View (cartoon, one colour):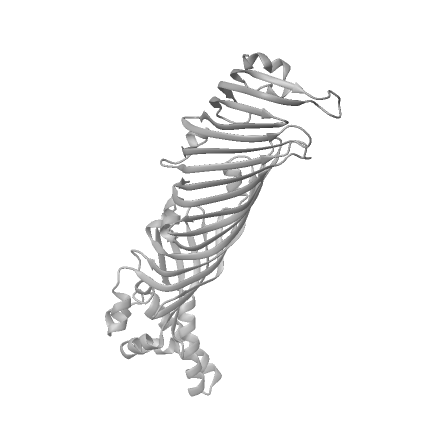
Length: 436
């Protein structure tokens, strides 16, 4: 029997461009009433069957196998087919009497985005893929419960191992109830919910966790310019959402919060201590001592840990609580980056008490910025993710020194007018000294 000829007779096949043939023998027995349909025994042989879906860009082709029907059950074992260029094996079991349901397992040695008819990056693939799905057609609405397992592969440019995805799909919704994989030399997990109907924009919510992943690998997989400048192990969580039609609208409407910690970190090709301390006129030439040289002469910035809460909105990522900690310095930052990578912000850079004592011996004026925690220098952040720049804050640093020196002046000069004139002289002198 030519399956294409059945299309006008079976509404479910309309628009699916069914092809191929089926032959076999069926035996119907038992009463024939609306309440009690007859039992069906027999077998059907599928040969080179093809079927598509108007909403799916590729078709299943070459489906061949035998469906065995016994007392209201139907079973298809080890059938073969193709999706795109990927060979598939397919097994299904169905109950067609009473409360019907269908359960299938599909396996593929490798499946690529091209096989699915979607865009992907070179090397993207699911290898060792097994998909199990179950549906009860009489449920309202009918939902597909599926699990996907892949031994390894690459997704969006990121290699992974032991991928696990559990999901529930409806006519206009997809909910990922479980996502887990080994990726970026660490672990990734999460869940998501998306609305994907034809008559409305896509809308998704994503919760993601990462544990001890390599930050450079993550950034490189997303083609972020920051991959060239930052490294470390990252643990954190993200809660983001977006909606819209097309990638640009989804980026415009992306909102969310990311919290994370980077340990054993490195900022490559940039030495923040040198850019801040060494930029003070005359200070760099006076610096001496093993701690100071070890920190200021390096070509990079190493740190023990960095933490931040990031807010995402309007194509910008911002933070007001970033903290960095290392053996001889700590830093805090409030700032932001556009999605294009432009940086802006202000913060404070604190040298450790031991390092502060070394510097004060050779640069006495820095003593007026020191306390029990060390020397604190305000700074500004600018540049781009691939070439960040920090500089002494031209507004805040002279004011901080002025406050310290003015307190001593007021203690020595009892005349308010004379003290005020002295403070103005200090302000002008500090601006000339520090920011010329």
